Image (cartoon, rainbow, N blue to C red; front, side, top):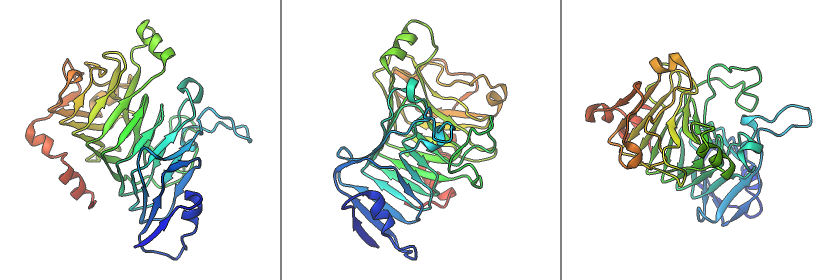
Length: 324
């Protein structure tokens, strides 16, 4: 293993690694706020911060921005950090998109996670709409140019990722994508803005947010799995859905999770997609807390103990050849 320490910028340290170097490279990131966009294209990189609360990578790209060529930046060119390589690990770092209020910025990615066997531990991933994208993109876009960005022409190969002891915060579809990801002991925080909360309280909108928007490919065993996670918020009671299907075969499973009172009793939303009601897989096992009670939508499933074992961490990691 080769060990490096960031002296100036993270990008300059990444760029200093010789292309012919194949060993694992650990990059230690001292405390500080790094106002830069990071892209990791090299496999076997460990990016490790000194202290998650004091080691911050921050940028403010927003989907609503109009670029020099007159095009809209869009969701997939708004990221702060992008990982596009295998066996990358990010530890003890805050990754933030600080582009501002959602009504102005619209979608704003903090982490574009497009690498196989990516592990993220002890991190904070912060934005508002579309905080964490777990690649790949869906097979087809619904509108021309909707996938404009670095993954637009990539082969659509399902990815497998692992998140441990992380805080992920956002409002609309803030964990989304087509890959398979296991979240263990994470804090999933729903946030919003005063003006939007006021609209909800005035009955002008049905929900303040949706945690997940999976677009799992058909016949894939896993989508997003949350185990022993806490879903927290100071938003009004019953104002947030756990998940809705970005594509019809969306999969999202919650195991032994604690649901705050902000979670709506229905739990899930069909995004007005008739086929999704038949083809999606939204399921829970042993949910706890005030948001765990109520009448879930008819297409959501309560798992038996034996069914829940099929989505355990051991099963997830072994079936994907993922060893941590």
